[in-house]
Image (cartoon, rainbow, N blue to C red; front, side, top):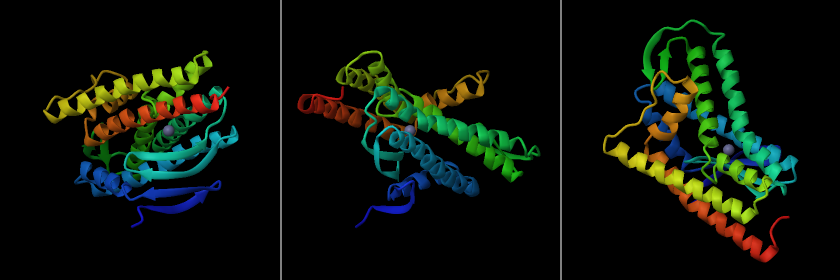
Length: 263
Ligand SMILES: [Zn+2]
């Protein structure tokens, strides 16, 4: 049975959906229950935001001589399969940063647009958000929060996430070899993965971490994403970081041994 479907092509890159994206959709709908309209909107907004985030990575990769096979939407978000990386570390920094920068720009745009709909009738809350009857205002501020969350989460330096890729390429720019830089980035990423796994276990037994409400909103959001979400998805992401970081380190070592690595 097929488990991936091609949805459309952008810039010659096929955008595909893995069957596991249905689990992500179900997860969002269940966690926002009983606000079904909010759940469905968040699912759609999340998928569109992820595609735009991955397209930003892809566009910069292609511009600097990289090659992108496809973009796949899946349970843990999106993944641009970059079959050839831009050869220079400084270009890899830009490629890794492009996704979060795109998400930050979308967050800013949605945030500004939401201010254009000032009328708010609060009917309930969803996490830090007030659910209002003024639909455009509510949808836009949810989309802004979603993209801000995507940007901040991806900037956590947990290799092979964007922040970890930026860390590795920055270490290379500072003169470290590719293997050494990857080893450091993987070690940092694995430390964060262990921390996240511990947070999930503590959350499971009822210990919750929440940022103090007097912190700035972005600081609270970042803290709550990193230490407070505690869901099964965070545990899966921690596992993914643990496994794929090591796999990529082995690949870089192999490449260094047999090809002499990139100079
Ligand atoms: Zn990214």
